[in-house]
Amino acid sequence: MVADVIKVISPTAIAFFVGMAISPIVTHYLYKYTCWKKKAGKVGYAGGDTPIFNELHKDKEVGTPRMGGIVIWGSVILTIAGIWVLERIFGGAALEKLEFFSRSQTWVPVFALLVGAGVGLIDDILEIRGTGTHFAGGLPLSRRLVVVAGVCLFAAWWFYDKLGVTTVSIPFNGVVQLGVFFIPFFVLVGLAVYASGVIDGIDGLAGGVFAIIFASYGVIAFSQQQLDLAAFCGTVSGGLLAFLWFNIPPARFYMGETGVMGLTMALTVTAFMTDALGGGKGVAVLPMIGFPLLATVLSDVIQVLSKKFRGKKVFLVAPIHHHFEAKGWPPYKVTMRYWVLSVITAFIGVIVALAGTLL
Image (cartoon, rainbow, N blue to C red; front, top):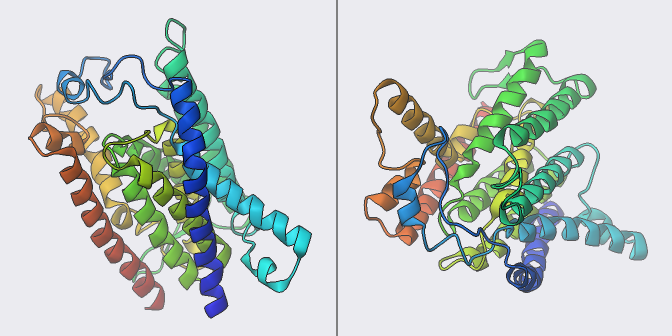
């Protein structure tokens, strides 16, 4: 038991210190090459202006680099690679126990993290360097959605064909048999989770929320004895905490699409890894553990539908965390209250997941 705890906690701590070590290097180059948007503000989902958002953020999005997500996935990859190399060089039971890069548990989530991070990095680069080109503003949303759907389709096929997973577990009520419809269901969940990435809009907000979510799934994976997956979740949380150290107000850099896309895709795979495959309820508790993400998506959907069918807005600005900003809440107050809410809903989700498994 103690050895299992060490296996999960050690990579978490290592990833944090690796992230702290590489952050000054990343920061240096992001500022050296002026890796920030050249014009503040954004365009609405329907293509219209967003005057309230643009007024709130007119001084925040220029002068502060994007691509801070490099710290997150960079610390994860360096931790995985470092442990792997040390184990190959020095051997020994201790290093062998620490290694968690395994085909059965972590290959697919690491693959999702890297593909998402890579495509997101391209989007960030185009966002800051694509002015005056066809890709001004980054990769079109449609292309990013194709990538997310494609990776989720591959992962879903792997679960369905290679691992024989065709069900989704329901707490206290057994399983739902989806058969081949498991594949489109997986893709829909992946797209919904990716859509929640718009929570990255206030200093420290997304970093804290995602750190809590991955830590929660680490607890669930640990309870299922999926120790490699639990270590992966811990490592992601460690990298996120290092990022958060430099992202709390005033942010030294923003997560950017390279962080958001990688994290949301890895989270989708992790949720399914802790579901029927691990004998747990990982997908059903995702709306609880990730409640701030759910609220973010729903607020966007409600706003769009209300404007389309009622001709007026429900929120001053969507997503809802910007609504609170527009109401006069200081950004740090929005962030810290989201952190508190994330901890409470994560506790609830973990309790339901564990109780639902035992009963």
